Structure formats: structure tokens, C-alpha cells
Image (cartoon, rainbow, N blue to C red; front, side):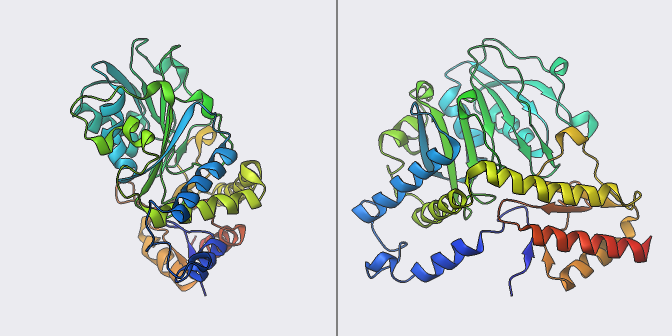
Length: 360
């Protein structure tokens, strides 16, 4: 029996996808070998990556003037790779709303000139900045945001108003494919796979074509978006198994009705969990302002932290895993990505209510 896995990532994957991968593991489509064993240059895998890209374009409504890159190194590598490709001797603006955007800002400082356009760190990252709290440079090469902060549980539902002509770059790692997004509002979107896409090790970059060809001369070829786009993400051997699994996930999401249907399911799960927190009489608390509470990552604390260990022990006994909060904030965190079922969230809520009734 599989557990309910609330881990922030690597995270739960759809059972149907895992079962298909299991069934195809030794013999993919009758070819006599695993997808992991075949040449990435052969027609079989070429078909896999091309179909994965087509399905992702369909799911997200990606315009034709955007390239889709299947890369390695995870989203953290993009913290350096993006300024290497986009700065072009200029400066860039960063909005810091949590741990991941803060790390992206610090890493970009190693590459070139970047500036802080706004931050909510003084408020312990419990909200997104108001428009008046942001100061963008109209000459910036790009403006960087993290649209969902995994650790602090803050999600952007409204984009900041960046100056005309400044491309918006977004780290969507922890909520990509959780709801419809207007890709045309971004110059570049990137997302590590291990939340809503597939296994760790794969990162997807969606970049507008006019932003290609600006890489610093010192940029290695394998980290140059333009070179990777020219070679169809296969200048070197790509993460083939990760791309294969991502393709299965894309088809699974399409079969569910696409991202509008996925969003409806995610709203139902998040509402159930947040309502349980709010109705607990203070036994549980979520620190994030209501208008920017993440649908994917729900941190919460117990009124009495001395009960944390007991709560986690009871969760484990009920086969609820991955609930311990990040070490930087403590408490609990339930990551309820696309593949987490409503049944799993209901099981967590049942534990929370039962635990509070006995321990309050």
C-alpha cells in the first residue's frame, strides 16, 4: 500500500504514470529494451521528446515564438545560467519573496550586475510585495520572480507590473502545471521537474526566441540556451528517463481535462486544508496572508511546538509522510502537488482534527 506523500520534492507522482513506467521498464513499446537503454539520437527517443514537447505546448498554450528546452542541473543551476544568458553586460532586477528567490538573487550577483527591486524578508516572507514596494529599472535586462515559494508557502496570483520592454523571468518550479498560465506574459519560465513534472534532475526552460543569442562569451556551450535550442536540447545526452516520465505526466494531465480541471482539483484540496487550519481555534496556524497562500505548499505550526514530534509520529502511523517543515521555518508543511489526491488531504485533515481534539 502506497503512503500519502506530502514531501516538498522529490514529490509524489501519479500512480497511473508510475504503473505505466513499470510496465514499460524492460521493453518499451516492443523494442526489446528499456527507454533508459536506447540512444537519444535514435528515432524512438526522438519521437518521445518531440511528443513531450508537443503535449507541454498544448497544456500550457505555449506560443510558437518560444523554445522549450529539456535541460539538466535542476532549477538551482538556472540561478546562474539565466544571468549568463540574459544579462549581456547590463543589470537585472530581482524580487525576493522567500528562500528560493533569495538564493537566485545571490547567485546572480556572482555573474554580473543585479539589483534588489523589492523584498518581503522583513515580514518573514509571509506575503508578496505591494506594487508601491517595488522599484524596477526600466533599462533592466530582465526582472526575476519566484511565483511560488516552496518553503514559505507564498504564491503569486497577480504578476508585478514591470516596465514595458523588460522581460519577466519566473521560477515556477513548485507550481508549474497547477493552473493555467499566460506564457506570453513572460520572457522566460523555468521549472525543476521534481514537484509537478517528473523525477529530479530534469529542468524545463521555456524561453522567448528574441532572448536567445545574448549569452556571455564565457558561457559554456552546454549552458547556452541558444546552442541548446539549436540542437533540440540534445547537444549532449539529455536526461532521457526524466523526459520520458515527464511526457507520461503531460498525457496524464491532458486526460484529466487539462490545466483548468487540474486547477479546480487543486483549489478543492487547498481549501479543505486551509479551512481545517482556520477552524482549529488557533491550535494550527498558517502565517501567510490569505491572498497569497500557496495552493501547493501549506506550512503550518502547532500552537504548542512541544507537540510537533507527537504529531509527526501519529502522521507516520497513519502513513502520512513528508510533513516535517523546512529546517529554516520549523513546524509542518504539507505539499499538495497535482498528484496528491483529495483523499490524501482528507486523511491529513482527519488527523489534524483528531489530534487537536485530544491535545488542545
